[in-house]
Length: 90
Image (cartoon, rainbow, N blue to C red):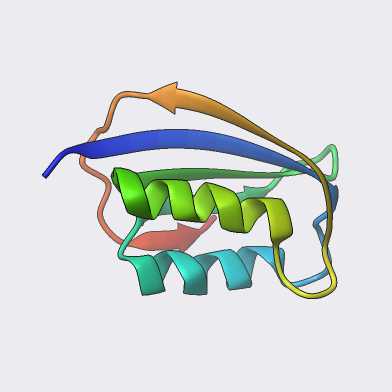
């Protein structure tokens, strides 16, 4: 099983709408490791590590977000896996 890692930055109305907690729940459902955090500029940044299918599903989820989010853009950067375990809000 090949493990991949992606860093994403999501812009739009993504803070104050339970984006991070919803992201954590979705990552746990898909068995994706990593973390998610709010950035000072109003965006959300996350790292996803897992199978290609699961990480791509998370990136797709980021484009929608939770019910009250409004996503303008999702930037994706490929990174080397480092062995993340669990998923945290930081």
